[in-house]
View 1 (cartoon, rainbow, N blue to C red):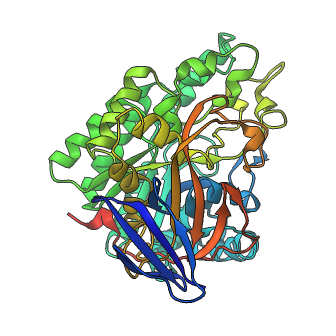
View 2: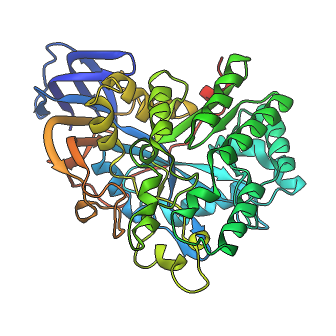
Length: 466
């Protein structure tokens, strides 16, 4: 059955206009004024509401393990749908002793197919940089996985990557159109500071931020930029959090380098004072890079508005507070034992609308570009992230009149807290379509398990354009 959405304000990365949108099968087939339905079509009156493309969240973790603790998986991806996100891109760690494509193919088959409730793609995370693995990087593009991440942080963890691995990955990836991404933090700086703080008895969650100050992120960002310059390859820096790292990106871009970055919703509304909340509440806010101060938040808002950063992701990482975040609590434990990450899959759009659009920090069209259009382009998802004829009918009808309060109790993320607990919310996704199929109605999930499908990415994404 086709659907005709009438009288809404259609928002694209280019602007807004009042128009109708018609979807037939899995695609958008017409956009214009005065469109008429065919017999049997569903007609939705979107008067007073915004019509947005389904969000593309290019940074989620459904399979992340930290010191033996593992996040929730694709069985909670309905949270994305209710939050207006219709495509997720997950980071999958290469299994030790196995190939990059082999790891991704097996994970896709065993952990996503038949489970995911929105569409999905994957980034490879190289953890075992043997020569034969480096040589395999071009095959990622052939298999529909045209992006790969390396962790410059987490010294001693199996997924930590040194400069040797990063440089070789940049060199090998560029000719195949594989976009190399980095988690930019200096692992040695963090290790030294962490050990010193613990020796001084400074073990509370707040010291997580002290162990990872902005200079840690800025140095690694600069180093990654120079490695990319040497390789003459594009570079994408994930979850940028501080002014100093921003300055490194801006300087590189002004020199003519293809260097780009994203930030995440929680870095725009939370700060390091949350880590100092009484009791052990601060453990809820342990994520890496660490939360910053208000001046860094303000710099990030300016950066996304001025296009110095080109995406806002969730970096969703669904660890429980009671059972998992408390691994850092007690005798002989410290902030270094707390699983890193924040569950933020469902509220990315809600946070950006309430604290970005409603406060005049972002226009609706800039929001669309940041949460859907550019992430799709960066990752080579040709039919996602835009409301245009021929694109997938991933459509969000957004009600700006809604007012409520964010709480984990109404979330579908499967964890026992939200970092945005008690935050005021203005507006919400009311109806969501995934490839023309209605999966959210009256802000409630009505789809079914396994409805999502794998979307292969094309190589030479937006980071290769200049």
